Image (cartoon, rainbow, N blue to C red):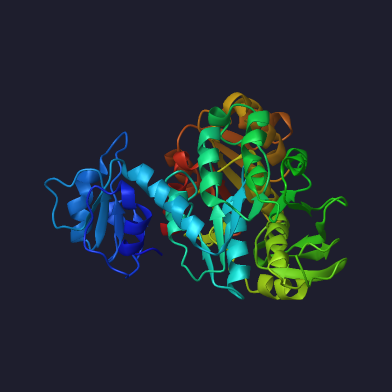
Length: 462
């Protein structure tokens, strides 16, 4: 993490005023004064709903050691870095810090799966190297600079999420991150309201492998045609991963063990390391990651680890020790029923993966699925496809929200008469409170704006 002295150096000619310098690293960089811990840098941003300058005093009172502002008049203390534009300054500081640090940077993009790939890659690398990762889902024009500024000077690796909402933002992100390794998980119908079409999404995500240096590594989903052809857009070495025989890193004989994780054979069909790794080797993997789709997560992370010089046996040992993370979390309802809580977010690809996990459970499988957002012109077709997919993977399907009318209609047409539609999450809580039985397994999933986490919390608290 940078210090105030570092920040002064990074923003030298942009500073209109600066506080006393210190070599002590900031404890964190935050844009919400309520999240401030002692020693933090508070960045005052002007947004559509609020102006961070109104909360600078609050941040300082909570323990912030400095603030990045555009107007220090009327503010407490003398801990102000004053610039014309705090957001632009934050982004420039992140870009310049990236140019100074020696860590090898892994950039991760894709329609779904970025966070889990980042977490697994970080856990595997950190067993052997000093490694930094993006905090939470800091992956946009504000979060990515904060993630870069959190890299320590002595870190050897940094694992960074890249999640743009437009081509312009993606150009900013990849030029700031200057990744050495670029992972593209997939291209799906996510954020189409912002991106436009599948072709637009492919073009934007492909800017990451396109930005890699000749000495870099592009880790591409070989089972996704749109990702696979990104190999034509990069100067870097390419490693493909997936289940198909054409992939360099492959998973075979995948066996899902419900909430106990998965096991499979991981095969390396070529030498994907710069030195030291053996070609054509394989290893048996057992990991607590939940759901057979997580084999793809493991493959992407393993490609980075092979580049770092780890043998497949070392990777397998690390995979066995993984923390499974917070997605697809297992909860227990008030009466003992199992809840699969994946209410954080939703897209067609992740919906299918969650339904696959539900299908492995017994005896009665219930899916509470809400609207998926930002699907653009694909909205109706995507919801109908999920309804049809869910029909054979659950015993009772509940759809929540206007968009999910299509989902329920398709499920009924596919032979799932036990499918009902409701308008709001509160109704779901009442229905499930009356109907949920102790041996049931309930999947809860929707875009975060549907707030189905409230259903999970209420059922768990009854």
